[in-house]
Image 1: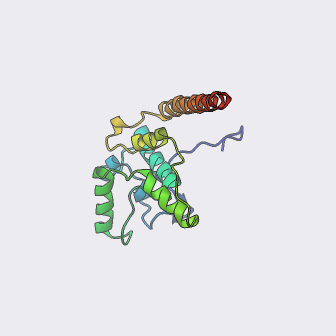
Image 2: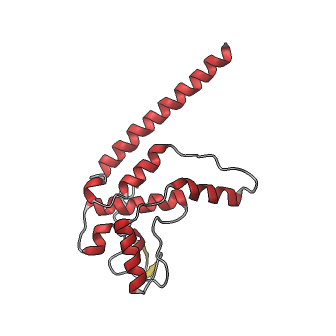
Image 3: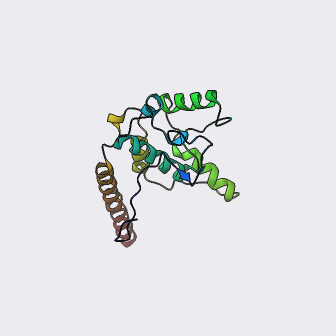
Length: 171
């Protein structure tokens, strides 16, 4: 925490609480579910793009209720870790819709889920989760510019829709 009261988040890949790892029992090299594809081959890689990837995993988890690639089996199993590494390096994350639909409908029996997020949110997360570092956002500023630009477009589109609805009701 900074002196002015703001916070700085340094590394999503080391999601640890004291000596306890919150994702699995593997601490060395970060939490496996948050490791970028390139870190599976070289633990020493620490770049802005590796953190952007881990941030994408966190966003995906917040939006979908799960990480894009789960550690299946014993977290100390080399086979389970190998399979997770392959998934991070080769598999494309599933789109948000089905996960959000399942979560909504399990809590709201008898109600049908209606998509409640703009396309650009999923585009942002999927760009963070690109396999090649050069295909991700280069830094937090680039990511924030993407958010600001798309948020403005969403706002303008909602204002236009509201205006058109008002004009239609006057006719």
